[in-house]
Picture (cartoon, rainbow, N blue to C red):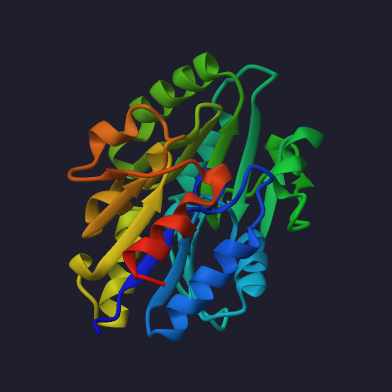
Length: 265
């Protein structure tokens, strides 16, 4: 039997509607690892946020975090880290924006937000991951894996335009939801991180199965030999992926159900 790498996004894909792992999903992934397959999670979430799900699965899992800025092995060792150019991060911190738009920085060991934002914590309630409030003028532009703006899509579109105009080729700009504009260093995305992981595991893209639901999954899904897109996915995503299959809703454990059929579990 040929080993495969099963890689999945978290929110809107592998996790249920409460942003948690369903027991059926856990059982299926454990069964696949017993058969000799590899598992990776690839998310815009921070590593310290994601490792809670790795621990719940209780199997060897590689973690691609912060949209590909960091990759950790199953033992928690950092395999790669790519940060924004400090001058680019400084520009992004200083971009004029609506008071309703929250500015976040993801660093290797923490999450900085420009002001209190209790509504952000609901997404991370099951993991306990939380932010530290740091005023923009005190934010350190060094060692930033991701700049994240959260707010109204129209306001985010303006910020996207300004960021593109300032440092276009030096940035990778994407969205994880309509209300979340995510900016990493140029060349940083889930697909690039997945390419390196496949090489490490001595597997080819054809031996990779990927699951996703939003625009920040584009490169990962286009790389994988078998790409599955959730029924709840961003409407533009399916058009961006060659040969993808549309599967069920993340709230109905669609990834687990698809894997059960695919591997005859």
